[in-house]
Image (spheres, one colour):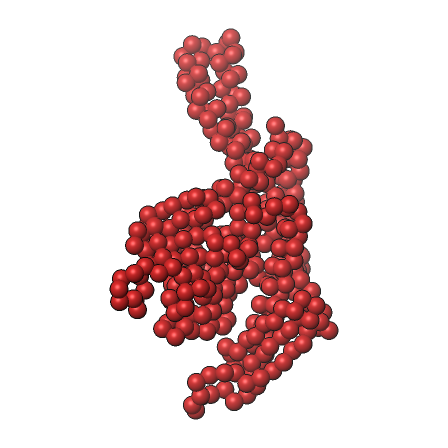
Length: 357
C-alpha cells in the first residue's frame, strides 16, 4: 500500500538532518534544519510504529503457520493475532494522515484580529468575550499573547483588537477560527429580556518573517503622526504613530500603541507581512480549488462559521454540523480543543479522500 522506498527516504533524511545538526552548523542553517526535522518528526514516528506493528503481526503469523511450533505456543500466538491486526490497522491509518501534505504555515505564530460586526455595542462586548477566550486558550497551551492595537467599545469589549499569539504550532490550531462568529443572547442593556443576535469577525494570519516574504521598500508609503490618546501630562507629544501603505496591494496598517516610533514601525511591518502573506495564500488556494466553499477553514472572513447560543448553552460549528452543550467551557477556552480537533479530523479526511494513499 505504501511505497517502501519513499518511507525509507523519509527515515534516511530524518537521520541525516540529525547528524548535520549535531555537527554544529551556522545559525541560519541550524534554524532551517531544525524546522525540517520538526516537520518530519511525526511522519517518522508513524513509519516506525507502522513497521513495528507489521513486524509483530508477521512474527505471530509465522508462529501459527510453522509446523514446528508447539500447541501451547501456537494457541498463544493465535490469541494475539487479532490484537496485532487491530494495532496494524490503527498504525496504517495514522501513517496515512502523517503522510498527507503539511501546511507550511502550521508551525507559525499568528496575528489574531477580532472585530465587532453587526449588533452595535453588544457586538463589541462579544468581540471582547471572544478575544478573552483565545487569551485563555493560549495560556493553556503555554503561548504568549501581546496586544498590538485595540479600539474599545462604548460599553466595553472591543470594536477591534489585534494581537500576536506566539508559540509553536499556533496557526495549525487556530487557522479554522477565521470567519464570522454569531452570538445569540440577552444583552446586559436589554430590559425586556429579548434575545439579540450580533456577530464578530475573526481573522487568523500566520506570522511571517523576512525570509518568508520580501517587501520592496519602494512599494511602501510610510507616514508618521502623533499618537491619539486621552491627553494629560503623559500624552504622547512625539510623532511616534506609524501608518504604512503597501502601494501595489493597497493594504494599509497603522500602529500607535508604543511610544517608540521604531517599535511601532516594527510591529506595523510584522502586521503588513502577515496580511500580504495571507492574501497570497488565499490567491493560491483559490487557484487550486474550483470551489473553496467546500474547504474547511477557507479563511473567508465573510463566512458564518459558528453560533454561540447563550440561553441554550450551546455552540454550533456550521461547517461540520457539530453542536456542543458546553458553551461556558468553550468560552473559558477549556472545550475549544473539542471543536478544533473535530475540524482538523474533517479537514484531514477531506485531504485523504483527494490523495492516492
